[in-house]
Amino acid sequence: MSALVTGDAVVLGLRPAKLPSRALAVAIDLVVVFAAYLMVSIGLAVATASLDEAAVMAVSIATFLLVLVGAPIAVETLSHGRSLGKLACGLRVVRDDGGPIRFRHALVRGAMGVVEILMSFGVIACIASLVSARGRRIGDVFAGTLVIRERVPASRGMVMPPPPPWLMGRFSELDLSAVPDDLWLAIRQYLTRMRQLDPAVNWSMAVRLAGDLAACTGAPAPDGVPPAAFLAAVVNERQARDARRAFRAGANAAAAAGGSSQGAGLPGAVAPDSIAPAVERDETVGAGGAAVPPGVTATGVPAPGPSSRAATETPQPRPQATGFAPPA
Image (tube, rainbow, N blue to C red):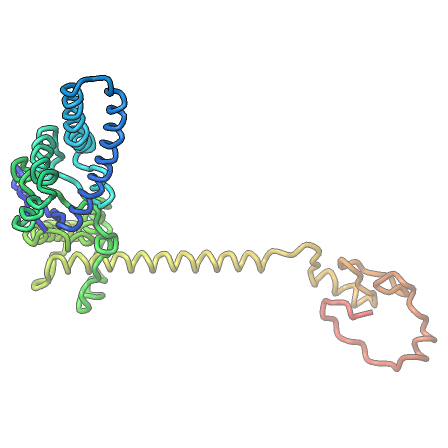
């Protein structure tokens, strides 16, 4: 990581691009540029076939300067340092202070690139990049630019580090109701990017955020606890409280839904109080809970008389009323 200091004395933690990724980006750019140069040269050769040798030479030089030199400069200027190869490799050209480049930076880089990349087949650029501490070639040194890695893996940049085990549950009695949401957001962003920051910047940000959090909660950080560990422990405590609150809300909602489903009757259901009197009057309960007069079964077929029942059935004691009709 490169420690760049801006005009406001702010240290920037940038990741300079390595030689393999820069070489791959340059190779992609050269393939595209030479393909365009070849097509333009063929078209101009056909169009200038009737001209003399001097005119053809002038057109060839102009084509070389416009396509192989002017086109990369224009692309880097308009895209603020992201050519096609750099876009594919996740790289960007920035100024030494981290700002976007302008036309003069792209012009110096393009002019020096003709010598150290095109004419020397990249040998000078590779040697200069290997010698430089931040992997800069000669064009970057004269232009005051730096090629950085713009694409950072999500697994390294978005994982929040857990608090130390000896701090788990230590802040369970801490009042977090007065902490604003923007401070929580700043703390989470710091914890997810703390490993990418310069050590001095990392410490100063942790101290400032820990002081703001202690001022909101009314309880300072314990002695001997690093500011980053204190922030991670408090954030973990808030997440645990949110999880418990969400679990209780889900349990209460499930209990309320279960009680309402037990109290609500299904279509066609009959209360037991409306069935019991019919059973006591020696009546049969039919479909839907309607009482059927004596001598008729629940299906509407006349019941057999007393003599036929006595001949085929043995007397049995009457069953007790349960609210449901016995099977016919």
